[in-house]
Image (cartoon, rainbow, N blue to C red; front, side, top):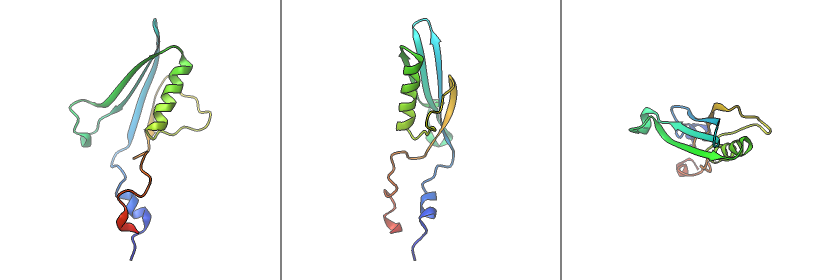
Length: 108
């Protein structure tokens, strides 16, 4: 008897939400974009962050463009035309590059 696909998928769902945080700050040298993901107890990181990106860009439009590109690559989803505030957090989808079949050979 086959196990339902939704049951198999739940084995791969993370126990906690992964959030990507960001801040866009104008300063004397242009615009500073900071993007980070906080570590959880499961990550066993010595730091409170999985990573932090600090970028300096020319304009607010460029900062938002880079932020949207980073979100797209890391499983963050935005509605078409959604505006981003200068500071916020976005829930990331688990395993954004997972094609839905890897590790599930036993379910077929």
